[in-house]
Length: 377
Image (cartoon, rainbow, N blue to C red; front, side):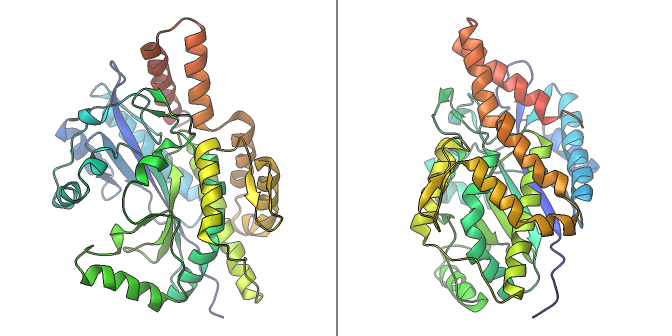
């Protein structure tokens, strides 16, 4: 077997830009704001499909400590540049009350072709996610881990949920972002492939038929990156709290190394049908951590706390290897105090109970998101 991969780490976060006075998204932010961000964060910041969004990405990191330092700097820099213009970034899967008609598409060739292709579906893409890249240079290993790691995607989504609202409505879902994203083609739980060659043949069919330009147009919850030798986890909502992002990134990294250890010992995680994984995906999207997920080996629903403890035990050796026990144990804190979705709903409902109007309650949620996105930076 080839040597152990370094499992390098890269984190990408998407934010909404909001007006501090109105709390609404800024459909047309000043061009010089992005330019200043690009000057200060050369190569680590970019516009998104909609102009109300901005994306940052850490450098390739060897440790969680390195990722923490870089991500903190990225959030703080964007927040500082925005504040000088009366704006603020918020890290959440959806904005509590922004409306799609207020959104404007970024004027770049890539986004123009996307807009032409996606039409109304594209105009609904006012959503922000957390993407985690883990470096796995070996093509065959990357595909093998893609097949196995899909099982854990709903568990990671449940910890990240931050999108309970859509256009001012309490959707009843902890991650409505995923419902919006699933309207796009080539999304959801990834396909299974017997080899890297089989994966490439399928991509080549789509490219050859003129359906996509390249594999960047595969928007699965987990995918081999088309730009880097990484596995890219994409299912999670943008996490409002920095430590939550780092905890989820640490868990994903440790899970991949755990699966690599199984392979080294001529074992593997059982592969379950997509229809089963998608049941857990829906439960995580709908309930977050509240109603538990199915343990398919035991054929029953178990409380999320029990499944989390099992997951932490599975990756204990890997967390020690990466020196990130504190980061993975932070997942228990997320569970105890609630995800961003839980806390947004709590603020909204308490404001209504105290006599606030619906608009005032939603504004209070945005105020909390503004404060929490930069807390501790």
